[in-house]
Image 1 (spheres, rainbow, N blue to C red):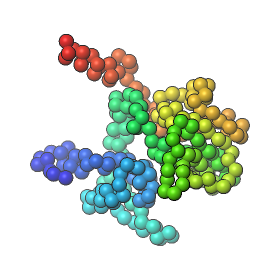
Image 2: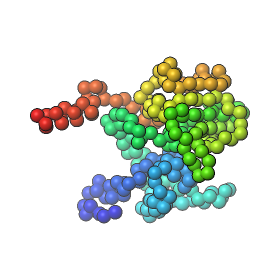
Image 3: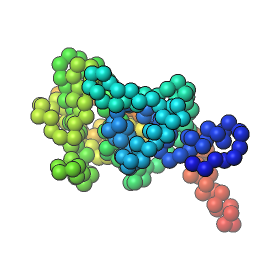
Length: 251
């Protein structure tokens, strides 16, 4: 990236952090994601070659170190103290975006892959007790998604031994709870735009299966880490501010 040509620390930091995808990679690395393929799930529109290049750049700057897992031999990417110090910056950026920028969902922002990956990362498998629990998700409004040589139209979240695993193919286990919904409703629930109970009452989310899991759905369903950030009051709504400014300019 071309230098800003300034000694200012904000300028120097921006030379690293303002590159496309870099902040999203740091978001996931700080969230504990370490494997290359898992990082790809968090940035599905990023090409593998560009992801590899960005990771090498972060490694060059001292923000990431490559570590080989002695048990599996797989390469992992670990955030260094230099990157970990950015955690409050990432958190504040997300809170600001939730409050001021993300006022409405457009179709291009609805990504079932990213949503399900986020859910799998935040769900607490220890909430389901001993044994195995399988939750099936079906998004009734979405066209079937082609993945390599098979079609993905359902998702399975398998939880056992304190770990959760997201499956794009039928794992062959009995499903304890089926969740039928549409992607917009589930995304709005995930982001805190509508309460879980409201989605259930309206039929936007339908639960079929084990009564105990259905009754406790609101308790164990994770929400985005930004869902609790309060939006500005209507008097400060960004869309209204922009509309008023445009109307004044036109007049």
